Image (tube, rainbow, N blue to C red; front, side):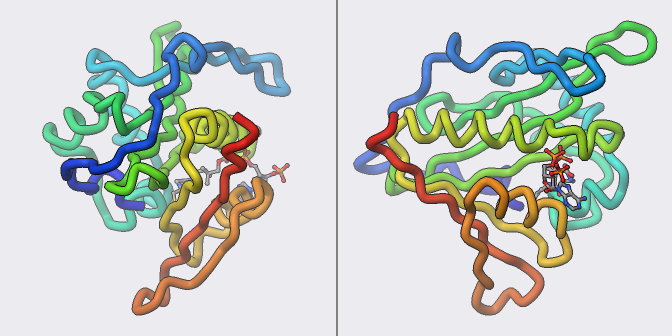
Length: 197
Ligand SMILES: CC(C)(COP(=O)(O)OP(=O)(O)OC[C@H]1O[C@@H](n2cnc3c(N)ncnc32)[C@H](O)[C@@H]1OP(=O)(O)O)[C@@H](O)C(=O)NCCC(=O)NCCS
């Protein structure tokens, strides 16, 4: 997915209402009892975000960024951690490493497009945390925030080989469609029941 590459173009007729940051923070406990803290990303998370991407396996990095990126450039770290709350949301999951230091173990984000009605999302979970329910939980939180914010839909670009992400999206009710001219990529789209916010 290319969420980090989206231009910060002027947003016309923006109908999106940013969620209250206080509603977005909270704990999440894995089935083994480990508790993570989830909250909106902050500028001071830059070192954690950079380290998170650096420590992803090459495969996970390729699936997330759709290229062979090894680490984020400083401008990308800045871009990913200085979000514009009027049209972006990024939730990080934080835990403790073996030495008790805080570490980022996942991030899920969306950027509202210029119509103000839809957003593109991206998500990445640290390899050691994959297949433990965190991706489903984070994406669910993101969808709930998008719905409360009045968005009609949320979509993402997923490599066709990314069976895990496609299964996760399908399980959350996303429709999966080919992208014309991009045989290796799928577009996943979730319609949000705005009336339910
Ligand atoms: C794709 C990704 C976000 C999934 O997150 P996750 O925390 O591992 O997913 P979850 O544990 O919440 O899985 C939820 C469901 O999705 C499906 N799923 C997730 N990973 C899967 C895999 N590797 N193979 C098959 N199904 C998978 C399963 O249905 C799973 O439910 P189950 O474990 O009860 O069977 C994570 O693997 C990841 O970050 N991958 C690398 C980056 C990436 O691909 N990002 C997506 C950008 S397009």
